[in-house]
Length: 211
Image (cartoon, rainbow, N blue to C red):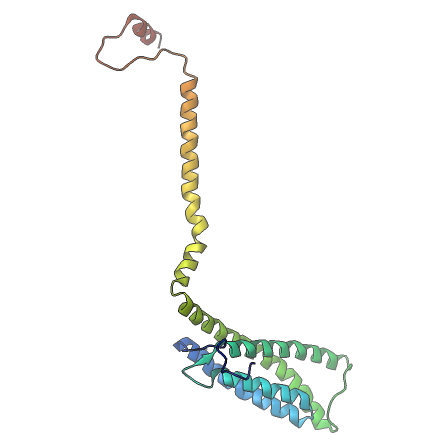
């Protein structure tokens, strides 16, 4: 599936200038990927060389058209190189513990194989990071096509909790103030008078005098 780009569920996207820059770096990495495969063939590590050639072809098919990138093939290459990085790390451990058989019959093939394993581990990590950056950029383009407002909606959702906290606190404090004023009114033990222009009564004058 990673090598075939004709299905409807494998869209090709028009890249942004940033995506094109990342793709140029990835193209350079693909050249090193082919060189790595040739080195593996030279030290008689045929199976590893075949897998690396397949990986390089997947990466090339993803970005072979500078105006159309295949987002799923980029993702496939990212996963491919990530798995190769894991297995290369395991291979280094096996080489350090001398728990694996070294391919080749001559001394230079042995040294070439060790150099290939070490350099391949570094390469797989770098290629995985580069392809992951390109995949993230293409994924954002795909989101823009599906929902042009997803960036603004994501920003609103990220600030939703902070924006709601203020009004809720304001409502809570207002409710508390109303409750306190109601409680104060219920605890009032004096005499209520109607406001107006009428002259104060004797009881009102007595209250003022005691105050």
